[in-house]
Image (cartoon, rainbow, N blue to C red; front, side):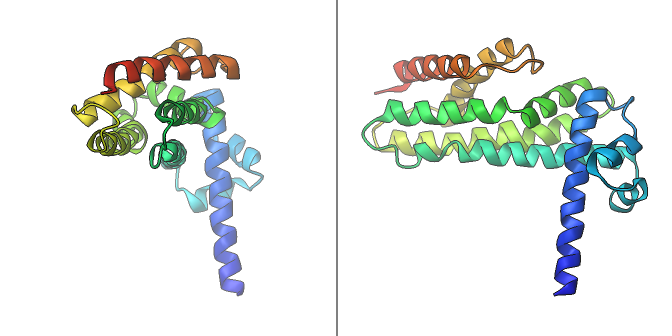
Length: 208
């Protein structure tokens, strides 16, 4: 029991460090952020950070990877309404669109977006890591849903990967513009308008 508690405590402490690291890196940038500031934000001692993650670069990479996994998981959950959409296909797409926009516009997702492209010069491989765990993972899962809907006669037959890319582009393009590339929060009413317009355009193109 003691061993299990110790293991749980270590995992919780590591998660707190990674969460704090993402916040500090997003606010200060990689070059200006310091490990002491991250330790303070995580409410741990500086040596504890080094015990879990050996140096600043390792910490940055781990924080980015953890955030990408979390954002990707949340985005995948947004596809659930398309699993069994029922009679109201537009409503199911609308719910998925709204959930995706919410997932991509929360503080963690915006921080991940800003850091990925701000640090692309110093960490080019991280762009691939983040995209693989978020956008590409989401596109592939959405393509599978669209293919199933096409087989059921709910959508016209097409390349599901292309259709998935186009649906996501109808959401991400307006979101990027309204959030100023992830630098401002977008009101719920704006997100709803983007979702509705994306679904309307997509279904006009892909309904049988």
